[in-house]
Image 1 (cartoon, rainbow, N blue to C red):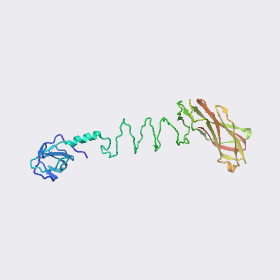
Image 2: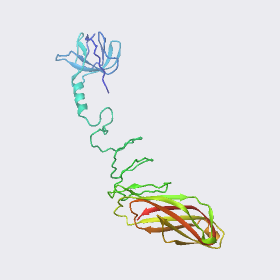
Image 3: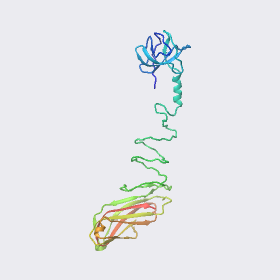
Image 4: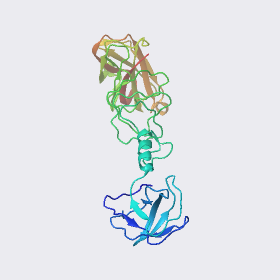
Length: 312
């Protein structure tokens, strides 16, 4: 609890004598005394009978006090004994204790600590609301709550990492740890709704779905190749059976077409046709990946042409 002080308090005297256990005293004047409580008075200062008391409340010149504080002894005092307001040893002692303290200061609690601006500290049970965190390193069992936005983070390792790119409408890139400063196309994604009918007439080739792939100057050491995934979903099928080829190309170099068979109409609707081409790691720079489909027999409609790339 704080104590209160005044620079204008005048010296006064006891109106009547008091015993060593008295907690109500009367003084001749309270001129200039603090108006908030507690505050300190010293009885018979500089004598063998000096006693320090705390005033906890007052009604006019009648004071309610705590006797014998700050190491002094509660003793009897005669009427006319000198009474002064001032500071005692505890004021200076508490100041020094505060200067040396690293915890339990300013009412923060016994186990609380200040967060310094230059000290290395371990924080726990802290909630940071919209902080700006510069070059963070999260170690041990830490976790993010909510939906934090990490601006150009550097992720040192994906060991034991769990991550998903399923919500990325246009894909994303992760910084390479290979030292080349490039981008690893892990989870590039392209999707295009397409409603149309593939027919066997002329074996029409349907294309147009594509995405741009940016290869880094240096791939991660663990990467041995790139998997290009192509996929369409059957929305209707009017044939007893239908089949088509699905394939992709990189920079207009065609990959080997994969044959896809679609069963009877009752089984075909909702079928996902998915093929994967494994290719060598592309050279640094930009590359264009395209998806193609071509009917061989039957008639069916597809939608959600999509494609993406992952490292393996």
